[in-house]
Image 1 (tube, helix red, strand yellow):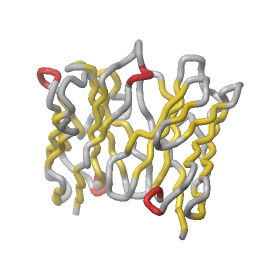
Image 2 (cartoon, one colour; image 1 turned 30 degrees about the vertical axis):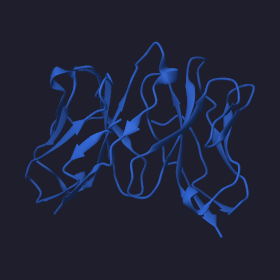
Image 3 (cartoon, chains in turn brown, green; image 1 turned 45 degrees about the vertical axis):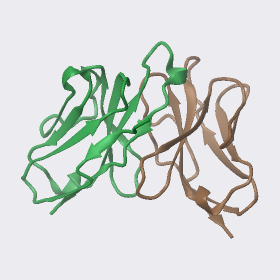
Length: 107
Length: 118
């Protein structure tokens, strides 16, 4: 019972920014937004998480709207190795995945 | 630091047979998760342990699936008897914290155990 909505697929040109949206309109005040990605045949890999403020790490940036009902994961300079399924999850204690967005980075 | 270890990596059985998967989490991680991932779908949470206690098993098909985490470290997931629809990758994950400080609860996943039921 994922609490998030993501587009099923997106394309991005290599070297350009990839912006992956996520809607989580029923998020509650103590739930965090997490992003994971899964490259074919591997287990999901943690990318970033946040509560209210925008966050940035070496992999990506996370932009959360002021009302917290949606967020965007930004991969600033997508490479072919970023081709994967990206999952947006709202979490307090458990971690439940939806179907995610299949991002294809094209040369 | 060693990651989450799972075995076997691959298993092929016939329907109605039984199978067991083993998971060794990262040392010191109190929380352990088992997920089922059917081809083309996101991982589905089956059961969540905190130390050796079950936190959530609401999506575990208890008529055929069982899991235990003796001594709060290793865990075993068993399927008996297996059905064709159990063909999937079974992922184990662990994390450091639970509840009060979820912002540090990054999940680390193993490589998974791929089950094929014929």
